Amino acid sequence: MIGLHAVQEVRAAEEPLLAALPEGTLMQRAATGLATVCLRLLGPAYGRRVVLLVGTGNNGGDALFAGAVLARRGVRVTAVLLDPDRAHAAGRAALLRAGGRALPAGSREAATVIGRADLVVDGMLGIGGRGGLRPDAAALASAAADGAGIPVAVDVPSGVDADTGAVDGVAFPALHTVTFGAVKPGLVVGEGRGHAGQVHLVDIGLGPHLPSATAFALTDADVAARLEPPSAGDDKYSQGVVGIVAGSAAYPGAGVLCTGAALRTRPGLVRYAGTAADGVRAAWPEAIVTAGRPSDAGRVQAWVVGPGMGTDDAARSVLAEVLATDLPVVLDADALTMAAAEPSLVRGRSVPTVLTPHDREFARFGFDVGPDRIGAARRLAADLGCVVLLKGDATVVAGPHGGVFVNGTGTSWLATAGTGDVLAGILGALLATGLDATEAAAVGAHLHGRTGQLAAERGPLVAGDLVRCLPDAIGRVRGVPARRLGDSEA
Image (tube, rainbow, N blue to C red):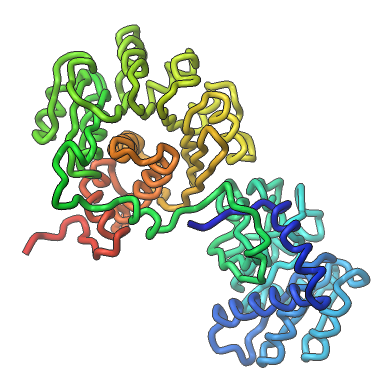
């Protein structure tokens, strides 16, 4: 797992190193890592043009020292200084000795060199930057966006809040961010994710001094470890029995998609107890369909309730019945609407409850998401005692005791009807295996995103494509090459 560390934690970890190491050692480590990434992006370095956008803080120093490394490799390096009198003096001197040059940001030539650059390094602000960029820095960020050079941010793109990912106005549009010591949450969530691009982590020795992370991003290997295939001693019951209450006469597809996703995620048993029984029975003969209430369904180890079921009195009665059990429950769609109107249904359940809101559904619980998505998800999870899976470009999963996962897999093609029903089915299947509820939600979000990426490899997708792609997506996460839609069996 990749730990995510807040600015305060990073600053505290730097202090003992700064006290123990010769002055400038951490900056040199950071600059060397930054230069290494830039050289890799440039390819043949000799004669290439690199522009450094340099502020007055340590990020500017990192950029200047990295520029000196590049200049010694034959790169034509120009530093554009926001405040020439306050730029890092040692870094500026190192750049000039190596053959680089420096210009004030307000000069006419500055815009020209940015436009002609092969690569632009953003060292204007650091991880302590808050609020929007000043006009002079915003102008440089906009010039970099308009140019053809590869935009690379130092530690965090200027204008992005390192803790929350919030952006107030203009921010540097990086395609690559070289971050030092630890990945900051603002690089993987909120608007910051869109400005950070690919994140490259450079080890500068902070590891032993960082506290245990409370926020994480899962890798494919982490997810694969939680998707163990059946063993010789397993049977359909030991793989997890999922109960599904989804769909209705008006929205039968929700029941079909949710049931199919649960079946495709684990080779166990799925019991359907909703009001779209005919459609589910026709689509999935593998499911056991009960034409009654959830209590009539038989042995179940986790429930999924909500997609397409409606919000009338009958639906509310079914929801209350499911939540009165001592089983884990995933609430999605209509179930979220009913729970938001009556939070006592879910608040303080003694067994895991997973809520899966998008931003508008989240707001119905009385909490605005705002720019701090991790903080918002944590507040709602703590208030209700539930796991909250806040959907978005980067999905945030918050447990009731403060643990957080941020998921970055997925594709914008997932913004289509029915994909949330598929996610709910995946979550129910994972929860039925006995996996910790917060981890199950994080694994489900990761797998759902990977499935979307696979299904969208040839273009637009519909929710049913996700169900069909799930086995191959699981195989890909576990390192097995995937077939593509339309491939035939030999």
